[in-house]
Length: 134
Image (cartoon, rainbow, N blue to C red; front, side):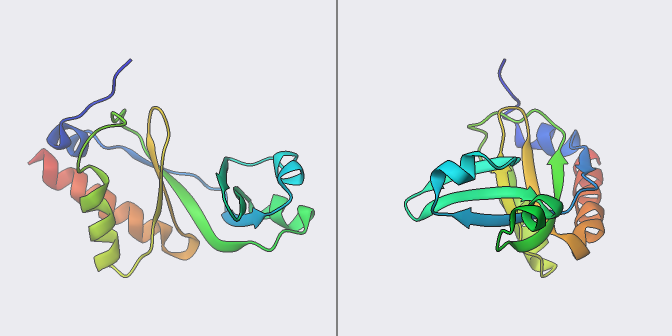
């Protein structure tokens, strides 16, 4: 089950999907507690466990969370070793003054963008896709 590697095909078939949920990032040094918390993403770093959780979960768990964001799924099956797919996307979002935290899943790439700029990001992604289709 391999994904697409051709950047032109990836860009032209890109179907970004905006998740309505608000996501936040948190970190815990108590790894056992971190694994008891429902998270969409869990990443082990030397300093602690990074969690991406809903804002509601962060509040109910008393987590010191940062980066209120929305997740955009780049609904195209990109290969994990596809070269150069996210670079132009991140560059274009940066040019619009927007930070982005990309995450690669097995089937799709996901972008966590500032919650208050999510619609702007979607507009940019649609523009990039439409330009690639011409």
